[in-house]
Length: 368
Image 1 (cartoon, rainbow, N blue to C red):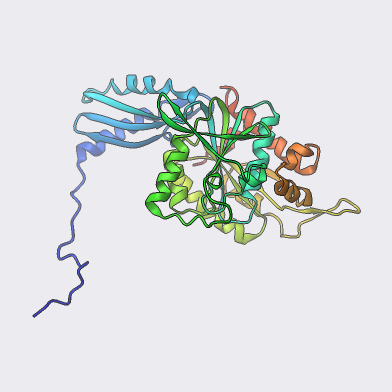
Image 2: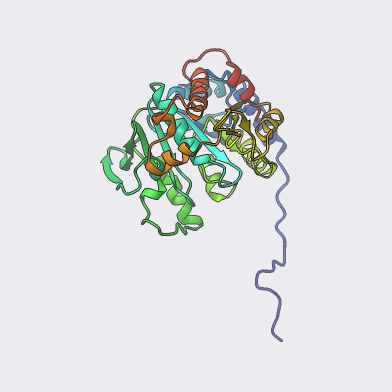
C-alpha cells in the first residue's frame, strides 16, 4: 500500500550536540581579550563595535574576521599578539575584511520606503564633499535605485577595468562624489526582479569589486526594511555606524525600531537619527508647521540614547534638486535644508576625522 506521508517529513529530528564546556570557556576567554582592544577613534572595544565577526575556535586554533577601514588595519597585529598569550592557542587566524582605499563606511537606513532615505544620503554626501572630504556613495537600494537620477547620472554607463586584484567596476563621478548604483547596471524602466542567490552575488560584487580609490567616507544607501539585501550588506561590509532616517509620524518610527534590532544583532552602532519632513515653513511668516506630526525623531533618539542629528524641513526645492540631479545642499547651502546637512557633516567630521577622545556625537552613538 503506497504511503501518502509528506516527502518532506523527517522521521527523525536531528538533535544538536550538547555544548562543549571547554570550547565555551575558551570562546568567553577570547572575547574577553578582544574587548580590551580599543578602536582608536571611537575609543570603544572592537567587539562592541561589531568589528569582530565569525569567531570560531576549533581545538587549539582561533579564527575570526576583522571588519576595518583602511586606517584600522594595524589592529590585526595587535589582536594576533594578544591572542598568542593564550597558553592553549597554537595559532590564530585573523582575516581582514575591508573595502580597499575606504577609511570610514557609514550606512544610511530607514524602516520603510518613502521617508527620504536616498535624499538624505545624497545631500549628506554633498555636504561631506563640500567640507573637503573625498566621498563615495554606493546606492545599494536594489529595489528602488534613485541615486543616479538624483545626481544627474541616470543614463550613464559603467566601465570595468582590469586591476592586479581582478576586474573592478569604475565608479562614476558627479559633483565631486564617486557613485556606484544598481540602477546603472539595469535597463531603464525595467523592474529589478532579482531573487536570493543572484541578489546576494550582485550586492557582494558591489561591496568588493568597485575601484573606489582613496575615500574619506563611503556612504551606503541601504534598501528600506530588514530583508535579505540589507542583512547581506551589513554582514559583508566594514560599516562603522548607521544613520537612521525617519519621519515624525508614529508609523515610520515603529518601522525604524525593527531596523534597530537588526543592527544591534551584528553590533553596529547607531550614530544618530535624521528626521525628514519635520515641518513646513510658512511662506508668509516663517512659522514651522509640523504637518506630519511631531516628536517621532526625538522619541527615537531618546529611546536609543543617540543624538537627533537634524530635522529636515519640507522644501519643494529639495524635490526639484533631486529631479534635475543637483542636490539642494550644493545649489543652496545657505537654505534651511543645506544648513541641516552641513551641521550633520561637521558632526561626523568631528567624530571620525582624528583619533581624539570621545566627542558628544560618538559618546552618545555607541549604544549597540
